[in-house]
Image (cartoon, rainbow, N blue to C red; front, side):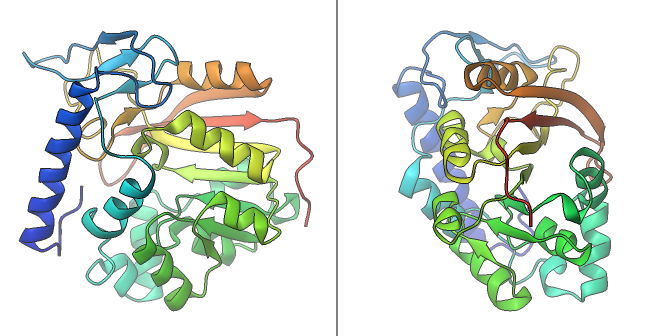
Length: 286
């Protein structure tokens, strides 16, 4: 979690919320937050005696117990307690050149990946799920794509709309109601924040019916050899999204899926899991 520019009160409240969320998760019986299965195995973490990470036998996700993050509580948390950095973050507050440089350094410019795995702007409209204030939306727009965003946090969504003039919706349902029907849905380091992941993906597909998904999440499947687990599953990431999860979800939907380990991010050195899904839907061509 980036706490630069955060008030001490906000940092304390965020940590208190995390502790309460973890306790509530254990009280509820250590169930998978996504599929609600109680069949889970403990994931021992190299170099640590104690670990509160588990692997769900029902859907294949890695997870830590969570009992509070859901629905309106999630909206409140990500709008008010999770550090948005809107006022002080140099990416948002700086010049356009500074934003572009820092976006590239942090791996937030996904233009080349979208072109390689989806196609040029002529291939169709792109919807960016969990777009914050518009990292990828802004970059794709500059590259000529017809693009919009979807963001839960009121603060980030409002900033992107007002300061950058980007079309950012509060939900997939709101985007669909406005006539959006993207050929591609892209997410980048978002899904690991969503405890009820499977229902959210079901809703996304039902509302927008894209013909292709590209989802980028932290690579967590090396847990047996990687002792640095905290950046991947912990306070801000209740989930570790695995290739097994994607294969199980896509098998239920009849989708075609490919997951592969991507390169490391310049800022952190951590690797990514890049998942491409073909749904068989026609998708809208602009």
